Image 1: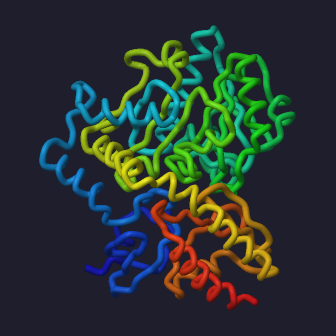
Image 2: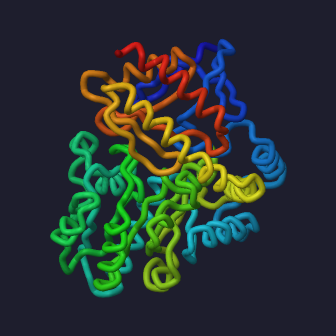
Image 3: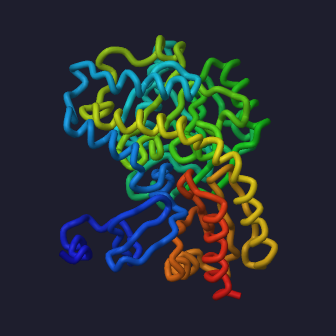
Length: 395
């Protein structure tokens, strides 16, 4: 069957690359013609373990033969272990499993609203950041500071104000007695690869403690090892009240989560306040547990820490070499190169695919680098070679 026939029956909301992918192995993808591509996108930060990972695949196959779904009317051992793994890794206490990142954000918003409601605050408000991206459902979209995404779907959730990222005074100026939470990505992704600054994060934590409002860290893209720590907020020496996770949490299986502190758990959602038919089912949680097992046994975090400086150095050298590559930014294996307006990022991505390198974009005109966390030094060198072949076309 011609894969392009899908266009006849699928809602056309994606501008797909002219590429039919059939299989993957390690950090490489293969199309329907057998061509090999070096993957530095990882399914938009999802495939932390690369492709055809033996232990991960075997765990899913084993669970498939046992039990896929029961609903949350019953206990299952996989969810208990997955919750323990995620709670220990995050430093928080209680986990709710969802099917996606945007659902995790929706749940976190409900947690914050209920926490405020229990204090007697009605019509509670949020402070989010400019250039943010938190998802496409109406609640998550309301926190996403992009008028292009929001305009056709208004009115959105009311009571959301946008402050300047890494500008504490801008946040404080938006604060009022109805504020229930401050929401931010520890490293901004879709809006451009932009890490939080340590003093900014510390000041937010202090403010939230003083005002008894919740600090919500969106770790959907930057979490699960991409920064060299399980969660990027660890770099800044703070602990949020609520954290959202997805993408690499399931390494390709659809699973997300929001995680809360014990204090928040005791003063927010109660029986009947929230739910999910599929969230936390045995198959999804088998995937989560397999990911944590692989991270431990294969020292995934150590690999990111070891190679991050080399990846940064490699990208910085491209900034120095090509005058239309303006700057590098990022943390760990979440990096971006900003291009001058005279070179369109879409054209560079197209040329990169011709040279058998898969990258994606972000921000206004940025290249985004989200490789599988298992890459080796020689694959960073291979990426540079292929990218340079692509960039030379624009000199």
